[in-house]
Length: 226
Length: 226
DNA sequence: TGCCTTTATTGACGGCGGTCAATGAGCTGT
DNA sequence: ACAGCTCATTGACCGCCGTCAATAAAGGCA
Image (cartoon, rainbow over all chains, first blue to last red; front, side, top):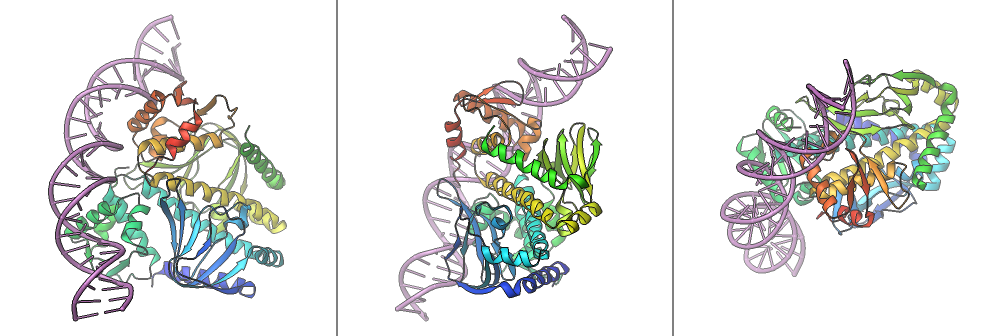
């Protein structure tokens, strides 16, 4: 487990502990919407198991994925901060167990203990930092740098990094993952193939890879022209 | 002045008022760095005149622009929230007048009045919403939709919208602006030309346009395949 | 286990957009 | 006002990546 991962774990636990007395357990079925874009209700979610996808619907009906949240993450605090509607949809990708706080519940909680908001702000700030990384990745030129950089970001967020053989799993289907990089699934696949040919990557199962040469992968990620 | 603009003005004024007793005037010269990526000091800036560019340096030495802040904006609060370093550089594009609070100053201020943090959170949340829009734009396919959507976003942030002839000015050089869209200046220029040919846009001065048909512009923005 | 559906990979092809180069327009300073 | 420079625009060309189609592999379910 990386230092980063330890911190994330601890962050989550601390946050969870801080809010524990206001939390109510709740389950979400696979496919269920936690909220829709435009909703103003606000629901703070502590996800314990399963995955939740945050996405937007374009006017054309196509969906673009903003985040995939896995176990031990906190999310859903946007409307609490600026009283504006949710900027995206949230849908359970699996059957999920979670603990939640309603809008009014959180208001009360924060009223009782102002420090709570500090904790939430940290999470919000982290979210913004991640968004910067995403923007940087999307602005860069060429498919290989994007893919390499995205894979490296996955390593950070996954707990596997025993140096020798780092295993990474795409949190979603290759199709959606490619799209979140602004690529077609075909281009993504081709890029992976190129990395495999260079002995930087190894295919394990579908959407599951092993990094053979992380230094080379970093080089590819940084080889973007911009 | 749009409703949106009114709100932004008011938001800024409220925020400014809230912090007024902690603020210290400060000037920045054109080209001066307000902070560097990795700095942990933290400096909350209320910009009164001039523009400030937030950018990252890639390993290749190229810069990518994340934000351009103009008059009447608050920024620089990231390190206050999560105690992590600034994720980007901040450089004055003009001679700027501002009022600032140091890290310690803000700590004291928030300690005295916890409501201050609520105000900052709103700004942080707004920043994240903007980031979502940017991500959505970058993920979409085709140059014209990107350009159209970016122009529309500029209208929102600028005070001009007297319905008949909406004037938009690029906050930075066409070159940099194109790059922030993941495009080359040439592609950007060609896209503008296409919009002009369709009588959707009119060139005024360099980097200054008039929207002749905002409905058509919206259509183009939404014509992205994804 | 076997069948069927879904999803990833590979190939061929065409178009969009990036690159390079030339021209033109717009600022700056003297 | 003129000169000189910077920066936007336009053109020609080509390579990359998206599209379409076919194949292969992997899950899902009875």
